[in-house]
Amino acid sequence: MLDATTRFFEDLDRRGYEPLLDKVSGTIRFELREGAQTTHWLLTINCGKLAVSQEDRPADTVVVTNPALFEELAAGREQGLAALLRGDMTASGDIRLVVQVERLFPGPPTSQGPRRLAQRERRLFQREVR
Image 1 (cartoon, rainbow, N blue to C red):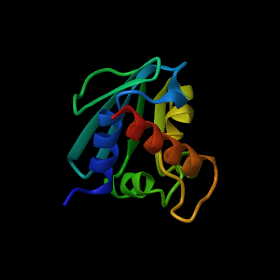
Image 2: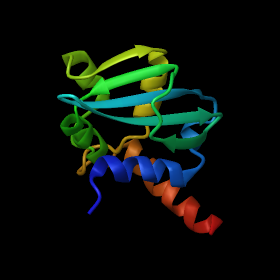
Image 3: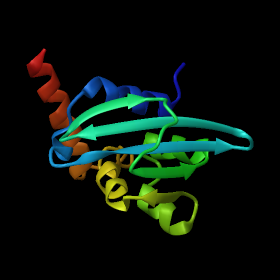
Image 4: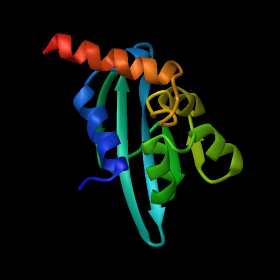
């Protein structure tokens, strides 16, 4: 069974294009650190086109947190900017990318706000494209 983190990144990679990021380009590397173990996820954005890999290479922005917190972010039970402000997550480089990419994370499970609406619209769009 896949964890929320893996599902989140695989979904981004499958998506291929995200209209919410059509004016965004850059790379953001997520480093999920637990003790001596670090897992890397590299998200490349080129005018809304998304590509995901597990490469450990230089990026415009580097976000560092622990796997448990990222699991909460990927499941929509935690908010990235709040975690940054609390110091539970750090970011270096182009911080604007963090703000833009946060829009890709799901909102709380009970939320009916713009993120849930955007997710529903995205699913409908993907069905029409198929």
